[in-house]
Length: 362
Image 1 (spheres, helix red, strand yellow):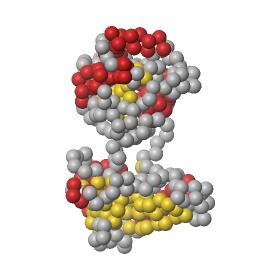
Image 2: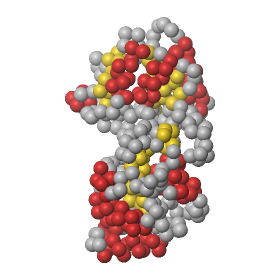
Image 3: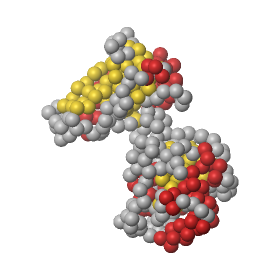
Image 4: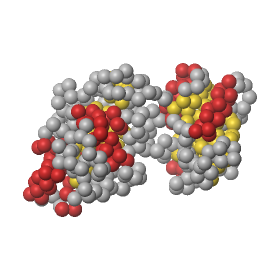
């Protein structure tokens, strides 16, 4: 849901923040759209799912983008803002107010002529009113599970679709890079929420805490690691998993391929051990450690002495952050690091190139 920005962990805590978890437990993460819809329907008995079905030309958001609208007007997600979103929210409220009749409406909007937006494209949208009899399939799609990341929907007699996870054979009918497709028999294949990239952050000091806040609104799953007693604040964002394990190497073993590894612990020796293990694994998209050019030079020398291949050593990002940002305040450093991480394409297999001219961080 839309919330006001937070000034820090000591500020009023919004619902997307939760009390600290036990070691290694997943106390909450950013809810996927179907989990959000399930919560809305359980609360109010109804909600509207908005889906961009097709885009022609330029548009603020791509096909497959979803938004959930609650009965009281609150909403989660965005289809791009502006006049388009404003009008679609009004249509969603009208659909929620209708107690009978069809559950689905289709909209086709030319962003220029119809809405006065300068994008110039055309967007087709589907609005579906979901009710309590949809909770069974909402629960299925809201629950993480193995198998395909594609759903298949059977047309509802009053409009909309009753969905379930598609089988492997059914999923093959949806071409790669296609958000959705209607089958000849009227069923609808759709991609579910994309897999978020993962950030593994080692260190819960002042910069680590600022980085957690900077990552909070982003579609990124975070594992935050620090073995020191009372290292973590009392509340953290829902997408953060806390790890108090004493052996960071064990945490790295369980990290997914192409995870982003960010190291900023209280100890340079621990930093070096984590960086060495992460680089040696040769499977992470980003391995960065906070520090100056002097720290980088020392780490490079020690990694060479340990026998790490030069190709792997060159993958270490140190200092952290994009060039040209000079401030050393924790929030400034965090913004720069997040910007650098976001430069990585979301797809698996991409790696951060070593950037020249890193700024100095003490």
